[in-house]
Length: 157
Ligand code: ACO
Image (cartoon, rainbow, N blue to C red):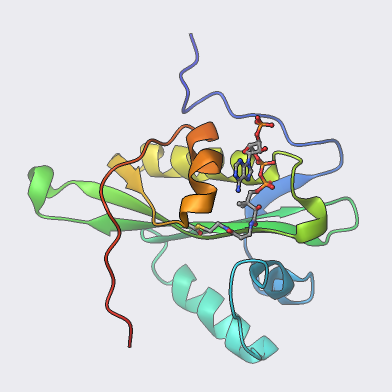
């Protein structure tokens, strides 16, 4: 029987999911992230530099995008794989920077993206996947299969 990790929900017709690439600057990847937080004025060169930095560490950085039929980025999210000493040199996946274009929310794109990121972490032998979120998003993550654990703390610079 397929497990929760293997059985990925389908995307709506015309949408596809893949790894981010440098050309996604022109496909609106940064506009999507503005649904999450301040992004700043990032040049194409700065965008490419970050994608190249991630590409040099393929065991750590995994960023996926969902595109619609017009090849516009409509959702984006990452899982960062941390290698630890505890749990017999285990690995933990940190889900980060999840955003769905406002006019595309409510189509299960966010949940499908999360399920793909969890699958990546599982395939890399992570023993868990964790994330920090606003309490307003708790139900969303619960619907994607995550459960509440712990308290978020921060020190802001
Ligand atoms: N509260 C309660 N339920 C929610 C919420 C919410 N805020 N958002 C979605 N859901 C529910 C949906 O109703 C749906 O329920 P159903 O299966 O019963 O129909 C289920 O969760 C799946 O929803 P999706 O359609 O997959 O969600 P969507 O594609 O709209 O993406 C997201 C949700 C990512 C939170 C989107 O609204 C968004 O981009 N928000 C702004 C940015 C943001 O807050 N990102 C998360 C930051 S946390 C982090 O990055 C680790």
